Length: 114
Length: 111
Image (cartoon, rainbow over all chains, first blue to last red; front, side):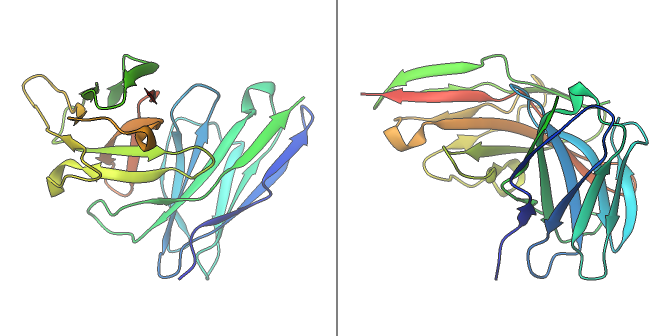
């Protein structure tokens, strides 16, 4: 059984550019949640994907979008990057359903926007 | 809307001293509370959840609905407890189960 992996580990972009971050879920998990963690803050929920559909979203603008693939891996896309998008982006996988199931976190991707 | 507050950014204690990491929440529904921990150079991981009522690595946390608190406690701190601790609340939105985190408390255990 492999854990949650994320790529890349870190990257640097400039304002206005677009970025794609990737996440491979833990074996057997069908749900991926994405979180943004700014410096000195706790993770903030961006959205969640369950069986390839977005099924919940936090307070983030539409330029934050995502995808989930048939193998349950996921992408987070951010368009028109802003300086405030600089953060650690975490993905977490879990078994979906109506009750809370433990979310297993990846190591994160550190995004720096200049 | 749900909110989690951790009032201390840093808590420094001596080895063997008791530890209490504070967490308060606001949520209109029935809360499900968790403590997550992040050790140096490791990923965020679940420490304990209130419904399991377990003691993990000597830590316990009791949900106090009257005071809307979920403080994390350990009677005798160990050096290996030094880490970042996040309190989190699970809110089911009707479709997704999302976690709302506090800002975290860094626990520093010194000799």
